Each structure stands twice: as C-alpha cells, then as structure tokens.
Image 1 (cartoon, rainbow, N blue to C red):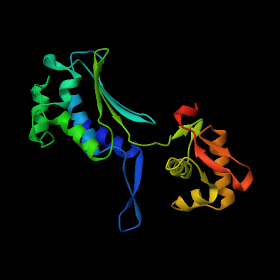
Image 2 (image 1 turned 30 degrees about the horizontal axis):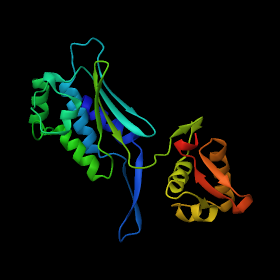
Image 3 (image 1 turned 90 degrees about the horizontal axis):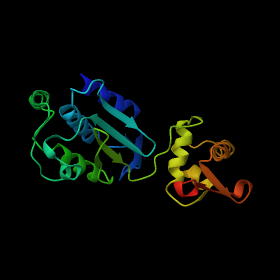
Length: 224
C-alpha cells in the first residue's frame, strides 16, 4: 500500500532529533517530526488528490529545514488553506478511498485530520505547519523548531559531523573542550579539531582565536 511505503520511507530517511530523558541521563532519539502527524497529512493527500490529472501524484520531499507533502488537485468544495486549521466540513474528493482508510482505523474522525496535524506538531514543540495551494496543487509544510544539520554538503556528512553541528547549535560559540564534553562518544581532541576544520572548509562553522584556544560557532543563514 502506498501509505505504508511512504511511512517506511519516512522512518528510514527522516532526520532524528535527540533529547536527554529527565532522570535517566540517557539520550533518546526520535524522528524530527511526529510520525502520526505525517501519516495524517499523507492520508489527507491520498483522500483529496485529483486522480483525473494525468501523471498526477502525491509528493514527499525532505529538506534540511523542512518537510513538504504535495498533492495534485485544488482544495475541494470551496475550502481555503486558512480553513484547514479550524472546524470545517469533511468532504473528501474521493469518498471511497476515505472510507477504506476509515474502516481500517486510519481515519478516526471525519474533518479533524488537519487540525490533528497542527496539534501534534505544536505538542512536539514545533511551529504550526503551513497549508497552501499553488499551481493546481495543495501542500503542507512541516517546520522544525530548531537547527537541523544537513546530510550532504559537497558530499555526505558523517553522523559525528552532524552531531558536532547539533552541539554547536545550542550556544553562540564553544571552545573545543566543551564541544567534546557534549558529544555522546567523543573522539580525541586532535580528531575533533580535524572534524571542525573540515566543517569550516565546507562553510558550516566559524572559528575565532587561534590554535587549541579557538572558539567555534555555527554558520547560520544570517552569515550567508
């Protein structure tokens, strides 16, 4: 089933957000966006897609700073993107597809899917998702509350390099020793400095000062 394939793709490729479990001093890794909210968005896309459009599709795209789901076809029955965050009539463009999802327990309540998406994202600490209509398609955009380290800049970044970027996103700048203390499995000082110099070469971090006493900071969009 297309929905199951899409969810499997998300589990494999969605960025992971780590957090420290209170009282346990252990890091817990979770998908960046709530999978339940993404499933709701995909269900809505399949139920409301205009299947009369030749070559139409439901599209899923993961970027460094957001996730987007697009569905070919306009909003049905005069609905507007703004109305999707409020109570609104449930009128799926494809009632038979919607009924299958409902009978399988994937749809729990008619007309609440988009509101549930918003609630789940806010509960997870993210901004409200954005809904829009453009060029004959409807889209939902999931935004992260914090920095997301890229997976690729010129070439694929390693998990350690991405972890270093996440650590640097927590403060304006840090010395090497503090960065090392925040890493889950820290390398030697020399190896960490090599990683930082490599990230600097890629334009992802900056340094102030010289040698081992340098302070390191993340390059954010306002530096570009």
